[in-house]
Length: 272
Image (cartoon, rainbow, N blue to C red; front, side):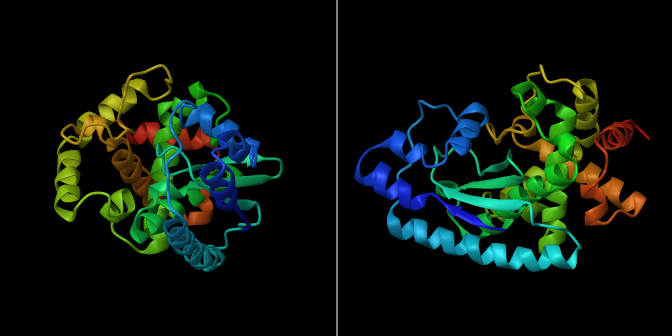
């Protein structure tokens, strides 16, 4: 897993020269994908100082070495995966996109303000890349494909589930890292548990749709779980149940054919 480091261009071009275009030309494929799906071009690039960038890079690089060992122990090939370090507009923790024969896990370091966030969400984004590499039909090439509820539910649930399994952490850590306090995370979990059946019914109604107004994969309103990442909760619970009932290893679940996976998860959404 190679590391492509754009932070020197960020510091020299954007910070020192004020040349945003020059910085973004250092990796056109990344910024095309970033502004197409994840951030608006008119947003400001975040200002992060040199020392903070170096600290965050050390956190991520140390984790990547740990993850190489974990993947090897789980018989998972990482040869098609590379990482990109850069500074973005603060809108997301990252994701992955395809570039020729590689999957590039891009990590906007401005969002990684603690080592715990690095541990959980860098692992999560790496798993997205591994999933797309092993089951390419889960990748998206348009906004409609990206927003299909069934795709989001499975890909986010799988990434959260395997993050928990690979790192040996709790459900709440895999879902939130230290973004929420322990008490707030527990209260959120309890609300999700109380609403689980209603949440499943809602997801089932929109399962194969992209044109919807659901906010279950956003974090816009902490007072309402339907606008505060309850989709990740549902995805984790469903993928975990599916893996346990079918005796699936990490390698198995990454390779599942989308049509089968979607159909089986749809069945789990129905009342017992």
